[in-house]
Image (cartoon, rainbow, N blue to C red; front, side, top):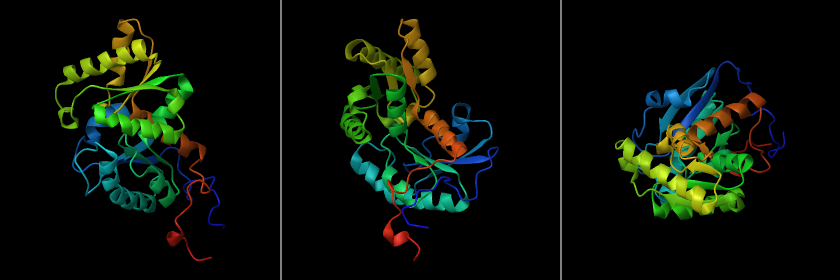
Length: 257
């Protein structure tokens, strides 16, 4: 088989549609959120979810530098997952660390929540705004949008001035801050779609949607991690993965002809 030939079926064994296994790769060290606590938001009937964390890196990803530190571990975890027979991988970080490298490394689908959410927002609306944690993350999303071809649809990036390590507490304060910035994005930036700009805001989309509706705004709110897991499920079910022409296996990893 030519080394660049795209595979119509990501997993050569062919997934059992009643037992699709999607693995979440946490790009930060430690147990930022347990999978058990996330099940009510992430669970899909017939889909087995598992989650692993990098052993080396940072406790939060606040920059492209932090993102890069997690990539060697993510590559290792991705290769292990493919060998175990996992059907798809989802990176649990809005920086999408190592997304291109992981796609080069494995054949199974690999999705990042930032790329997925931006393309869904561009598909389902005209102008999206990202509401993230801090001002310094704005440039990260601007670079990502340019790379993903969605910059023309990005209305703005707003922030709530709350640190990542504060997300476990103060739900009401976080909700109020995100809602306030979502309203400003709609009113001031003409956004029709809101993307939650941190996977640590998991589960907040429904509340933000209701809060917007109560104020007369019928905007779409995207929770990136569950949306990405469902997109991964759809790709596996359709037998699709990334093209090997776009993401060729590194030469040093190819079997001799």
